[in-house]
Length: 89
Image: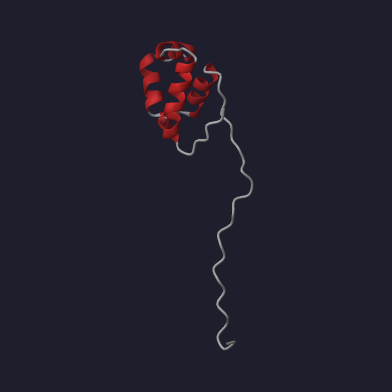
C-alpha cells in the first residue's frame, strides 16, 4: 500500500505503524540497525531530523521502500492577462 507524504512529520505514524505491524519493539528495531532503543524513540518522534541514510535503514529492516513518484510536468503559472497597448482602443 502507498502512503503519499509531503512533510517529514507525516513519516512518524507510518514508521511506528510499520514497526508494530512487523511485531517489532523499538529495542528490536534498534538492534537490527545498530542503535539503541532510545535512538529509535528519537527517529520515530522526529524523522525529519534524521539522516536519510538512517531512515532508509529503518525502512529496509521493516521491509518497506521509499518511492519517488514523478507526477509529470508541473503546471506553469497562469499568464497574467495582456493589457492592450495604449492608443489601440
